[in-house]
Each structure stands twice: as structure tokens, then as C-alpha cells.
Image (cartoon, rainbow, N blue to C red):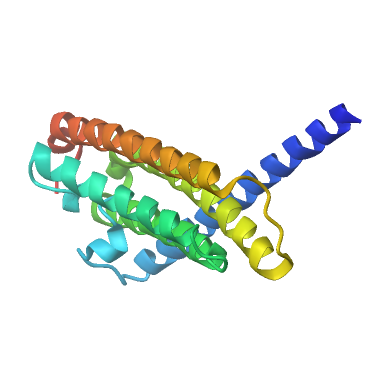
Length: 201
């Protein structure tokens, strides 16, 4: 019986990850279509600093911009998890982050054509994958916390000691913030060493 429960939990976790990454892919498709129509600009709300040309002019600027954009998404997920109705916010957040990736990749292809492939592979893809993994983990915690709060409000169910649960919740998001800093540092290094060589407009 225990083995059946473990397999069921594992499958549920797998399914939830597939759903979360699916939302990101939806955002990427929407962002790509948006950019292909020419509806793009240097607005950070559109490209979210995924576009190398708008990610910053110096090593520090790229690090700062990448970290702030990723940290902001994590903070939004954190506060969303403290609400019983925060789950829709997580859905929007994942689609929005995917949108930024789609817009940025499509913009680069529009500007550079086939020459954009190395730039996308080196300057956008590693950052996009890393940022999305962190964001998905944050949104998963949002769903868990928000779902538990919803159960408590509607059914009066309290699964664990609330103080211990909240402490663990804060620790998880602190770790995600730390990982985000290292992602930003790696992105800054890639841009510093490769952007000028890869992007010639």
C-alpha cells in the first residue's frame, strides 16, 4: 500500500511539473506571435531582460537587471502563496515569463535572421532555462501554500504546524533567491564575453 501511495505522489508531482512548464510554453508561443507581428519594443515589460541587446550595457547592469527581474517573480510567487486565492497569480506569472522569452527570441531572429541562432543558444537559452526552472519551483510552492490556505478557509483543514510550515516556506524562497543571484552572475559573464562577438547589428 505504501508503494502505491509513493507511486501516486510521484506521478502527481510529475503531472504538476508538466502543467507548469506547459504554461511557460503557452507564454513563449504568445510572445513569439506578438513579436512576429512587429508588436515589440525595448520595453522591459515585454522582453523582461531576456533580450541581450536590452539586458544592460555593463557587466554590473546585466547582473542587476537579470537578478531584479528574477527576484521580482520570486517575490510575487512568495506573496501569492500567502493568499488562499493566489493560484491564478502563479498561472499568470508563468505565462508572463514565457512571454518574455518568446518576445526576445523572436526579436533577435527578426533583427539578425539565421545569424541569431548562436546568440539565442548562448545568450538566451541558458538564462531562460535557469530562470524558468527557478520560477516553476517558486510557483509550485505558491500552489502548495495557497492550496493549503484555501483548504483551511473552506474546510477548516490544517495539515501541519503553521509556524514550522511558514519557516520552511521562507527558507525555500530564500534558497531560490540565492540561486537567482548565481544565475544573474552567470548571465552577466556570458553577455560580457560573448555578446559583442555574437550580435553584430
